[in-house]
Image (cartoon, rainbow, N blue to C red; front, side, top):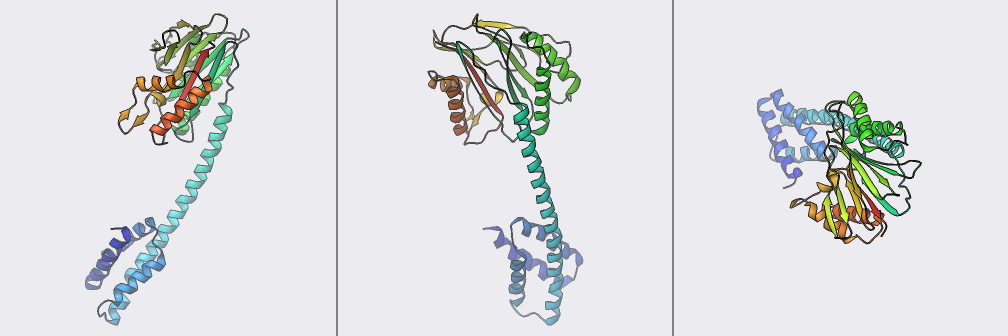
Length: 335
């Protein structure tokens, strides 16, 4: 039974009660019905036609016909007021949507970063917001020695507040000296910035790593962010990266440990946000083994093709509806 099938008996009942009791409280039921009519796109013409059909049933005196217009008038007046409110809300929603679209475009411009070209290594990255504004952030920086800094961060939350926090992180990073790419030092500096400027109810996780193309080492620190995976080409095994550290902004005096790996030819570093590991299907969250198997399916492709392929596979598994911001970065040493 659709909504229209419930309107006629409800409207007929209101008219019948009013013609018997002449109680204005019954007219209030007509006001409430008007809002339901708008929600289901029932037009004023259809309401008038319904009223006419009901009053033509059986025998009604001229006085009853006249009194019935009290109900119709009340319904139509309430309909007009509700319709005006409805249109006003639609206008406000459209304006807000336009403002968010502008903000999202500005965020994309402000947080944009270029994937660097590195001798002897290949980097791929993809970041897709669950909504218009992205609560994930990634950034690349290269110093004079061609060492590549890779940052990935996640605000625990979504929407505009998360996006504003990411913008602050980006500009805090831009203010740091590029010749001091030490992961532990960078996280300590950012931690103080976040502690002083971000609302205590918001939390930011971050991982920062540096790839040295001369030594083929990857040194990293983490602030409450799961570091990701290390793929060892020789054994064809995926291993979880070690790493512990307090979230940014909790304690301004927090220190961050550094961890280092040496990459052999074909080895990969895989950094990600929790929107990747917490992809949800009808059967629940995907397992980490499922994720590494997906990566392994594309293992012989360039890094950018790997991250794009994995994203499309996980998007399909979620029926093309992301539940969280998705960021995946892969650094592969050339074989």
